[in-house]
Amino acid sequence: MQESARGFVKRSSDIEEMPMEGGAGIRWLITHRDGADNYSMRLINIKKDKSTPYHSHDYEHEIFVVDGSLDVTIGEKKSQAPKDSFIFIPPNAFHGMTATVDTRLICVVPVKAARKILGD
Amino acid sequence: MQESARGFVKRSSDIEEMPMEGGAGIRWLITHRDGADNYSMRLINIKKDKSTPYHSHDYEHEIFVVDGSLDVTIGEKKSQAPKDSFIFIPPNAFHGMTATVDTRLICVVPVKAARKILGD
Image (cartoon, rainbow over all chains, first blue to last red; front, side, top):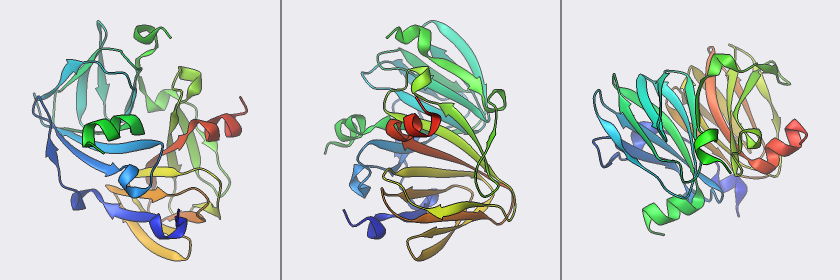
């Protein structure tokens, strides 16, 4: 790896936002395509009253709420997650989120998830 | 793993901030101690004119600038990273950051770094 060549600083607005099921949008900020071999950083934008679907998968989420506020369900437990909250979703835990105001969050997934979702 | 028991929503302010070399403060939000086996999420607080030291290590950083603005050095390249920027520091790349205003950032490291730094 050419480490010094691969480090970078970018603006989130430089990355195309892609639609997600449920009405959210996602930007894949840092992935294996950048030489990040272990985990991937995404910025997710959920407008007021939009959601991410209640679902599960075999990898974890580590989330930080940058702006806004969420109603979060993990398993059967419901919680509120305002700005500056953080959320851990373990592998195989059912989870879903609904924004109560326009909300942005950072969500980090392991590289196996990125490879599966992005298809490489 | 008891996945449903281990998922959580917490507030950053619930976590104790620890001092870092250079004058920044760090909160370890999600680690292996929570059952997060692959990578760890930290919230770093750098007051205006404070820095993180110019240094390197054998693991990567994936960073998102939540508030504020940074002057970032990666190798010999200098960049600005205002709010909503993201930064990739590959393993073994020398790097340092100075806040030009009060700044907060999310910084994710692999679990091997957390185990080394936190001592377990």
